[in-house]
Image (cartoon, rainbow, N blue to C red):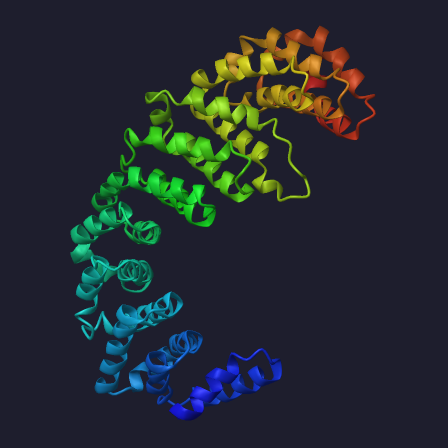
Length: 450
């Protein structure tokens, strides 16, 4: 089989679609025989070109599950040994990674039954190798093995914790640091023991360093793993963050305020602020982070977005959600800076900032209702002025804010009917449907004035 399979692997990689299709059909037929496993192992180790060796590993990963139980113990040992050799001796990175993927699949069956006792010791040894390639592929395997045999790591938690922290701080290889970051994310997602999770607080400075390096080199897809890790830590009931919350917030604000990054990356940064506001509001208050957050979130309300893009990722919408959450959990700290922003922005020559000034007031009206009731006159001065703005979008935002006031600032708003009611009646004649729709929804407010 080995000789015919080699020709098929080469044919499978040809640019000719018909040739590829024929090779694929024949490979499927041969793959029904368990002897395809030693044949693929042979080509993984001996094929002359890396792409053929890689293809052999890819096919082996797909077929090994169905054939593993049918293989003799001797053949299983050969497979395991060949894969270890491929990981440590192969020159091609894609082939090493493909071999590591096969190891992950086999480990699911072999490790729990005690059939591969030397795998984890090998990985620990490999991860401390002087060779960058060995360290990287070991971390990649730790990451993927967490999903299949995570329980097997429990007795080794202390050693693995120290190893991951060391690799996050690897001074010579960005590839190793990135692989360590991914491994930390996988391991934290698997770990549910509170005492173990708490120890990940030590990782935060190194995680931030690696993520900043990735952003600087354009690897946003890797950098966002940091946000996924922080998400896990924030939602944990354990007091995980401590003073590190300052660094997390600073990093998140740097990312979400930069238009150089992808919308999805910025959105994940904003979400971290949102989760902190929801789950750890006292930490934001304790470390005096409310004002720095609002100094970024409020201007984001004025950021122009292409409405053809995914609105769920729009920074202005995400920022509004953060401000709303903060108003509900930290009302006394939120109202003064938001009101200051609205007062200044309402006078801006930039229409987006005038729009943001009233949007912000509408957004906080539920959480900050008591404070806003005491400031009804200056608040209404801003909103009613915006309702007369020549820009349609600003009038629309003002009508939205009035709707929020009608819902949350009763009955105090009724005492201002003399100034509010004429503006509402005016708005009902607005040329913009957006303005009229918002106003027409405020029946509760209009009825209160009768």
